[in-house]
Image (cartoon, rainbow, N blue to C red; front, top):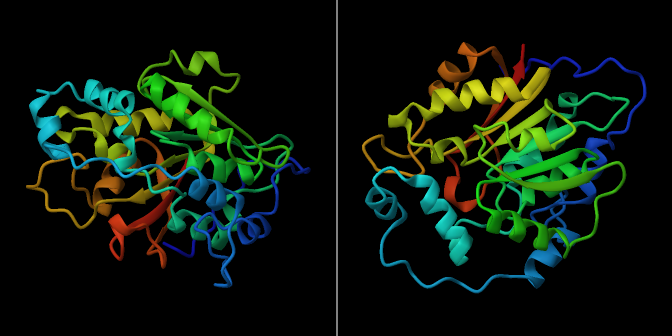
Length: 286
């Protein structure tokens, strides 16, 4: 379905969203301009300047730690952040697959009178939040642990502020609760981005179905869900997180709650974990 055009999110005539091609061309989060000439963006420079020391090898694998928690997975995530061991999964940049996808599909976001709103659940240090803010969006990153939110805010203070009207904010809260949403001016989002968040939820507990219902409730009609599909390579009999998934699973989950898949493409650039196997999809909320 890669030839389908996403309908406009708004028909209002004026624009506050910065031109997508220009922003992505100027600000390559991966540290390489899209014409392949080496160039460091301010995100890359500051990521390098604030590089984290390598953590000591864990005594147990992630999967063993979660298995030993007897289902108390939220406490495990909070403990990782509180102890500063989050940088096992931090890659220091937004995914180049996402950067390229936004550049290649500028029709995703049409001009609007007000800045578009974007939400990144499980945002980590906020690299994807920073990318959306640089595109002129009001971008929000959500994390379960207060220590995670603090780390994202501290990292945000080390890089240049986004160009107007873009903004970035970090919130502590449970994705499935309305408590954090009640603290925001916006209750619906134009964009939600999911990468490694849904697959960190135990599918045996029905959390994938709850995730689909939740994102449907958070995205306004005509809005967009972008999924970087990972880990498609993983066998189903292997433990998580992340738990194995396939593109067909996204279809079954999201079409049921009112989404239409409008793009499904294979990236040309990847983060190492999903190299040559990840897919990226965009879904319009009907």
